[in-house]
Amino acid sequence: MTAEDFKSQGNQAFSAGQFEEAIKFFSQAIELDGNNHVLYSNRSASYASLKNYEAALKDAEKTVEIKPDWPRGYSRKGAALHGLGDLEQAAEVYKAGLQVDPNNAPLKKALDEVEAAMGDGGANPFGDIFGPAGLAKIMSNPKVASIIAQPDVMMKIQDIQRNPQNMNLYMKDPRIMTLMMAAMGLDATVATNPEDAAAAANAAANDTAYTPPAPRSESPKRQQTPSTRAPEPEPESLTDEEKEKKQKRTESDKEKDLGNQLYKKRDFPGALSHYDQAFEIDQTNIAVLTNKAAAQFEAGDYDASIKTCEEAVEAGREIRADYKIIAKAFGRIGNCYMKKDDLLNAIRFYEKSLTEHRTPDILTKLKEAEKLKAVREKEAYRNPQLADEAREKGNVEFKNSNWPEAVKHYTEAIKRNDADPRNFSNRAACYIKLLALPEAEKDCDAAIALDVNFVKAYIRKAAILLAKREYMKSIDMCNEAKEKDVDGKHTAEIDQQIYKAYEGLNQVQSGGNREETLKRAMEDPEVQRIMADPVMQSILKQMQEDPRAAQDHMKNPAVAAKIRTLINAGIIQTR
Image (cartoon, rainbow, N blue to C red; front, side, top):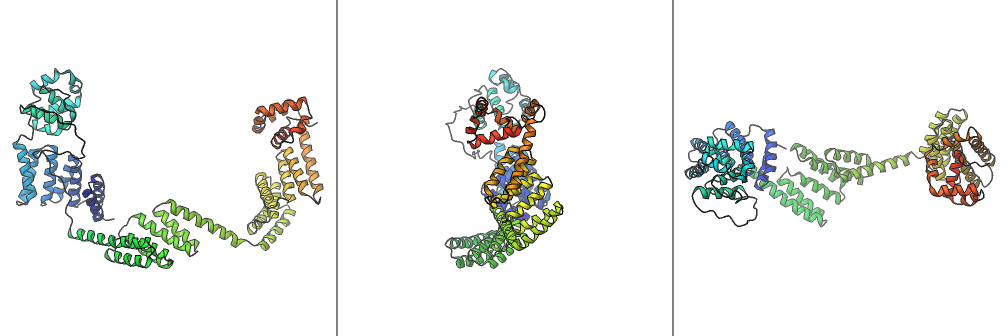
């Protein structure tokens, strides 16, 4: 965005009463154009609206410095000084401005108000209220002892003593107002805010009665008396060029709204007609193009929608449009390519959209496109015939004890056909040889999931469990393999595996010191959990007293699994 764009947004925020937002926009404009006197003038007005007269004065002084022959700068500076209570200096500034433009009506009016305030004693109607007599009354009042003891309060009193006119600088400090009332002999608790305190003090200074105000509701803007009110700031008038831009945008938005209404009714030709008119009126209104692209998308004209979005991006880049609009255009291009079944381009433009502005909607669409692309690539690569060829190559390498090379061929076979359990089972055999047991077990589970009757996968998983010294689980897996081996083709291989498992189990139960075996077993977290279970403790006690009870408990699958774990660890002996 340009400095003029930020200035325009600042003026709009000011007109809406959003002074803090206006300051942000004017500050951004100043960063781009630090010698534009109008920007400092408008920011000064915004600060003054927030009663931040110090900042308003600083910007006003910068305005005069840049453009000393511009009357509005003196008006800003005088208003800031007026707000700070420095009426004499404000009057001098207004007079300096009138030397530049003797017929300037706002400067004349402001000078009259300041001089009227000074004539009424507006600079300080309370004279030497903090003189010796006033301080004596304050010191004798116990209600304000804690206030007068504060160092910054005494500094303010001393400043007022040096220059009574500076009283105006501290009128908003309730502590000063409370001390003023105490100095006049008034009840220091009569008022609860600076305005009421000032009214009470003013009444006392003029020897009139003070009547506390009735309860009132808080108002965001308190009214000041005409004699002391600083002029209300206004933003700098729009230039003819800015007025023309604003008028164009208003007319363009009207056409866009008409298009939106027809879009909702799914009258896409009618909507497109209004969108075209809207963009013809104001070619900086990029939102019109993204709306037009949406209508073309809904009408099924995806190529036209892509072209319109590309135009929106190009035009948006030129005027430094909001990145969210650019992101929306890229996202819509991605949607069009999804409809055209062009996943590569869809992913590319979704990623571009997320680079501009990250939104959950586009992120979800990107993930869906990437997932669909992966599935398509996998399906395109599938070829059962080539999978069989790769598996045969793997078998050759396996027989030659070249396990790593065999794994590569089996992996290729899986990529070509992941529905054949033999590919997973054969790769598991290689992993067992390479002692990559977790990978081997995962492949066995995959083979069994594809074919629950694939006996070889059960046998190989039993071998893995044996290697992990989980003897009882290995035996259980062999028993499952026997159930699946209905024609008895693998009986000898299964029996051999069972024999190895029992042999390993016997070595655990008979080898070494019994205490050492128990100690080693109890280091296993799973064994610890089983032994700590009160129900298992009761079962084990019952089995010890009556060994025949074990047969009944083994009928419960959960209990049987725990008993097998204890047998495998050597806690329970089977002999």
